[in-house]
Image 1: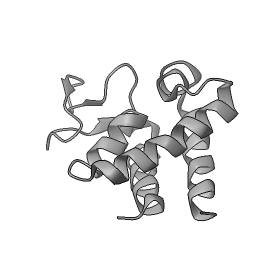
Image 2: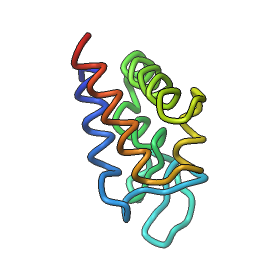
Image 3: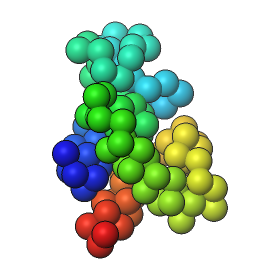
Image 4: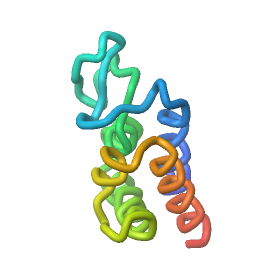
Length: 107
């Protein structure tokens, strides 16, 4: 997958607030913490969404995460994707992904 495809796929996973989470990479239907690549995962944080679509593509994962770091900095003044995810809410997370996608499209 290209970096744009990774970011778009991850964004799609969390585009609905009911499929997004905080404080852990992923959760199952009952709200229990699970690994991002667990088949029972239905909700993801920003990083968990990236990990779930790149479980065997570490280069692609690193490229996508790097762009998220830059987008997080633009949104929050910090390169912490976790800070945006856990403290600024779903709307900020979607905006962070949109910024990262726009950047990736320009590369």
